[in-house]
Structures are given as C-alpha cells and as structure tokens.
Length: 156
Image 1 (cartoon, helix red, strand yellow):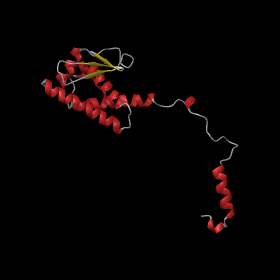
Image 2: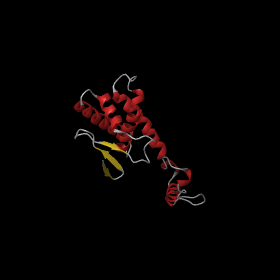
Image 3: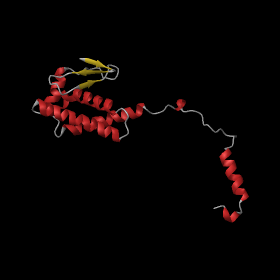
Image 4: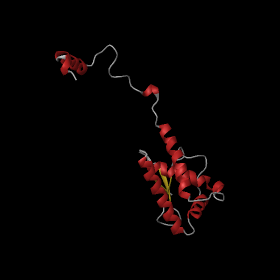
C-alpha cells in the first residue's frame, strides 16, 4: 500500500494495474479487499491481462464521460464509481447480463448527480447584489442622456 496525497494506491498482483481507493471519509462503511478486487477482475475478463485492459478502458471511458459533463473531479468520481461497483458486485455478479461497462456508466451517473448536489450554492452564501435599489447605474444614465439628445426618428 502506498499513500499519495489523500488516496491510497493498492498494488494488485499484476504490475500494470493500479486501483485508487479514496480516503475513509469518502468511502462507505465497507473496504475494498483483495477478494473483492479479485471478484471484479474475474467479472471483467477470463484472464488477468484481459481484465486489466478492460478495467483501464472502463476507467478511461468514465473519466471522458464525466469530463464531457463538466466535472472537474472526473478522476476522483471515476475511482469512486469503480469502488462502488466493486462493493456491489457480490450481489449482482450472478444475475447481471450484458456489458459491465453499462453498469459502471449507470453508477457513474448517480455518483455525478451526488457530486452536482454537493456543489450547489447555499442561499446564504450568495453575495449581495452589487447595485442596490435606489442607486443608479452610471452607464445606463449616460445612455439615457445620449438617447434623449437624439431626435425620435434616430433612436432605433
């Protein structure tokens, strides 16, 4: 296990694949164990190399999707998505039919919606308007004076 910033990087049994695990305050009450990660790899492909390639392809696709949605934390959300799928996998592995990518995408959408809700402004945090009632806008006053100086037929 290697700690880097706020993420823990777990080195799986093969060297080219790195699983990023968020800190405890972002995770659910369960941890991703090596058994859960092995289950994810088994679900993704029959061989380790194929599973590793598919894992990286899914993660890259999730990052691209989240970036297109305007997410500034796309890598973190993609990792959170992979973690949630890994934790849910024992329940759905036997009954899920289809390409695993689409399950990841549906979970990523929910993670993204949670991220959006967490980033919404609180009404108390919105600053007061810069122009208060009773004050006039100097640029608007100047425009009104200039328009008043023109003849009616030239104001359009």
